[in-house]
Figure 1 (tube, rainbow, N blue to C red):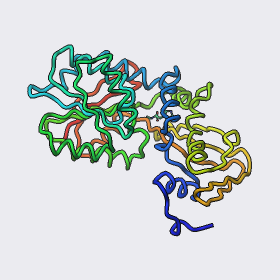
Figure 2 (cartoon, helix red, strand yellow):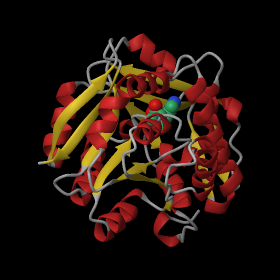
Figure 3 (cartoon, rainbow, N blue to C red):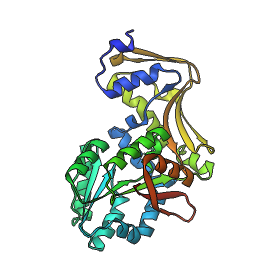
Figure 4 (cartoon, rainbow, N blue to C red):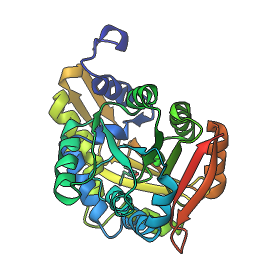
Length: 322
Ligand code: AVI
């Protein structure tokens, strides 16, 4: 077997997989769940009754659409930039309201996947043809940098779905700092944060009985099988979820139910698992006002307003630059 420094990796996915599965304890990054199959499974997760996040945020946006649209608008027009737009189902609530009020805006969904952007553009053409859409394919920060360089209009940056929750606090501060750097004084950041709540409700959202979340988590192994020529037996791993109410961190694992060796041909790697050994695959952080305030303070942002449901299940915050 070669050691790590002797291998030239074909992709970041190959390199991260090698590192994660050669470490102790083992880990994989959740961002790699999202290939075509992972995207479909995530769509199914968002439709599950247990996954309350989507409907909570949808209701908050619907209930507060007029006030949100008013706070976004500017007499010289606005660029609405959405990082990780997905199917845009929730964003359409706001777009509809901006159209209704005849505010001047254009919508710039940013996504790494051209396929996702094409789908979104098609659906907007059908449902809200009056919206000026300018899809931006690329990574969040390259795109934000580019936009802040050439555009002097007010920017409203949207990050919905509690996507920030898949980052550690340190990564989240960096993420927010990067956004803050691209913001000017009048720009706004509108971001969704899932809140701490009944721990059982959180566990159920990430451990549904129908097994969709388990399949989503195991798609990491399937993707390694497909793209890196490995022989993971999916049935030999169990999806396992924990939630720590003190830190607000939900954690996903895949646990090996037997002692086994997996071969990853394209990495020339044999991965040995002890019985009950784990691979950590994802965190889904839950927040409260203290944590969000702490993140904002560390990233040079101030909280200007927030919108929430009656039970404080989920919150959307508006931030500005300090
Ligand atoms: C995309 N992200 C915010 C989801 C979450 O809730 O952490 C991903 C997910 N993982 C399992 N279910 C949904």
